[in-house]
Image 1 (cartoon, rainbow, N blue to C red):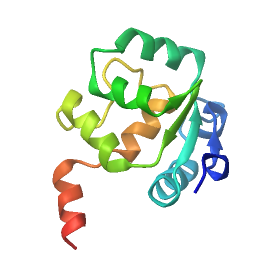
Image 2: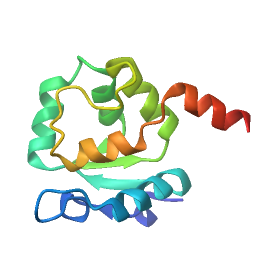
Image 3: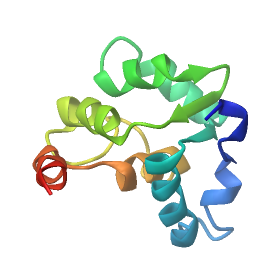
Image 4: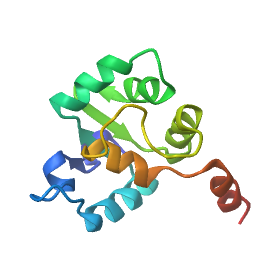
Length: 123
């Protein structure tokens, strides 16, 4: 499937006006990552975070490798989870990224602890 057919998401799709997370969208995002992948448009703040952690953390390298301009393509939860695991030792969070960002919400919910991924693969 080409990138142009992947859903394009922005912060406004994920975060509610009150700052909460739209869990219906998050659930859909995880399904889409597993099926055809998604594209997420990073905000200026998320791009500044990426610039700050570039070369220091595996998740930053993963994002850079899957970034075109400000569009991040997510289509492999195993690779994403591995990068996050190397940095966060199982917390499922991107290092130094605010919990209030849509990107952190996507990454946190897409994260699969390696032991869970192994269990799923064995089924």
